[in-house]
Amino acid sequence: MISNDNHFFAYLHKQIPIMMFLSLFPGLGYVFLSWAHGIPLRAVIWYGFIVVVSFWGYHIYRDYLDKSFTKKQLKRWYLHLTLFYYAFFLLWLSIFLLFITKNEHQLHYIAIFTEIGAAVVASSLLMPDKKLFKPNILILMLPLVVYFLLIGEWYGYILAIFSATLAWVLIYTASSSHKLLMHTNYQANHDFLTGLYNRYYFIKYLQDFMSSLKASSHRSYLLLIDLDHFKTINDSLGHDIGDDLLKEVAERIEGCLNSHEFLARLGGDEFVIVGSEYENLEQCYLQAEKLANNVLLALRENYLIECHNLYISASIGVSMVSGDSNAANRFIKEADIAMYEAKERGRDGVIVFDEEMAKRVAMNLEIERSLHFALENNEIYMLYQPQLNKDKKVVGAEALARWTSNSLGEIPPDVFIPIAEQSGFIIELGRFILETSFRTLSIWDQQGVNIKQFSINISMRQFFYFDFIDDVRLLCKEYLTDEMRGKVIFEITESIIAEDVKKVIRIMEEIKELGIRFSMDDFGTGYSSLSYLKLLPIDEIKIDRSFIAELNETPTDQVMISSILNMAKAFNLMVVAEGVENLDQFDYLHDNHCDIYQGFCFSKPLTEQKFLEFYQKT
Image 1 (tube, rainbow, N blue to C red):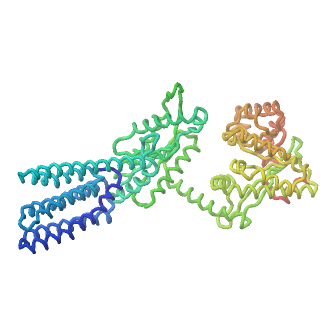
Image 2 (cartoon, rainbow, N blue to C red):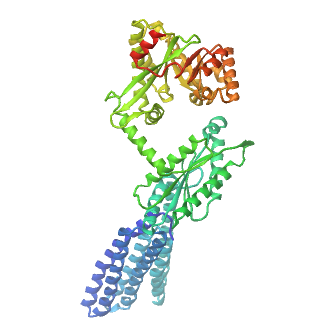
Image 3 (cartoon, one colour):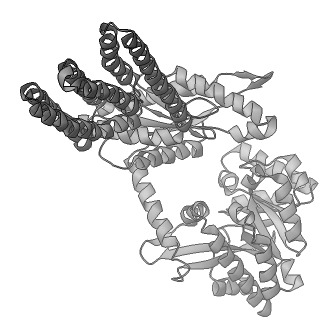
């Protein structure tokens, strides 16, 4: 077969009407000529065959348009197409043989010209397929060479040489065009670095494969493979090492596949596999998991690249593919969701997209859609959780965003905040939180609320937004005095350290010039290290609630908290313990010299007015 790319089938399919036109209408000319010279029968019979073959070609043409082929059916269609083209050119050879002897009417000249013209048509229209253009050119030109040789005159030998030369030229030009087309097609459909198929070809392949699955009612699977922490290798060792690593990764994945499985590189460190066809869904599922685990094992083995011993893992998302949908992107999206689920569960694993995940995705999409109207509909509001000192006096507050949707009800912040982050809505939401919080702090100051600190959470995407620093400056100028700015603390999470540390420090220092301080939120759960505590201009750390929750149950957590408190004192940092739920936890933290306490043991988050009442009471 010419190629696995249906582009070639489509090209040859489009030539069928042209071939029919070039046969039916010029063929009428032969009928009229033969009629005029008293030899109509042979031309009429020949033309009858032309009409029959044309009808056959029409059905081949319509079959390609009307049907979704399986691979087996496509092979059969291509066989019919090949026979159709051979039939037409053999018919043109037959008309040459029928008329070449009619010297008395000079019809042999027309036969010779027609034979040459048919050979040119074969070299032009059938150029993408060597199995078609080479044999047909020879079928048409060799009889012409033989005819000239049989003349037995000097000019006949010269014409024979010219005919043979023309045949060679036609084959050479068609072959050159074929090679150029193959090269261009290869470049368009393959990844330059690894030699694998690229995203463009993969999308076409998957769409065609789904048509095949629809015709056969079979199932298959799609594996989306994303390397874990590849960016770290690229950034630390350079792109040349990263490129060599990707090449070896591609080779290892290829080594796990059989001839019926398809592999492509989507870009960066993402690869995709499409499996074979399976009649049974359970068998398909088991094979997908087996292959995914084999790929993980292959990728985990040591890589030796330019004297560097490298180790890397991957996260794999699996989607079950069928012909029920017309959108290939649906299955890619499902595998992508499952892959990110694998990353969230600790990486180096396999997750299969299922119905529960689909419901969660649908819910997240609805939340995302509703979230964009939440500010406009005044559905988002602020609560403030008191922060107390060791004497249980209110010394601060943390501003917390809450959302009660008119259509979805109350949406927890741990649900809508990540969605806002992913969708980019966090920029608009973050500015609303900043402005509302600054305004509240200003109002409280006017009402005599004398707190030492006022904490506001800043998301990573908001932190790196190009307008963030200017927004903070404008809001400070509008709502806060210099004294009030000194009370504001921006809480950032440890994940921010995974970004460009120099850029993080530069942004923090520009904001600190306004008098605002920084706190490291959820300390102990992410990327923190002593070196980062020394580098970053932070003023406070906030012990994650997960350590506090198990304080009375796990001695390890007690040691962890004691270590954090001692380390904070060494770096002259304030420490806030969040999630303090009971007095035993408070007593332990108090005995170990924690500075500030926050949690349901003292108060849940309160409205602006309720916070004012709580402050006055304590």
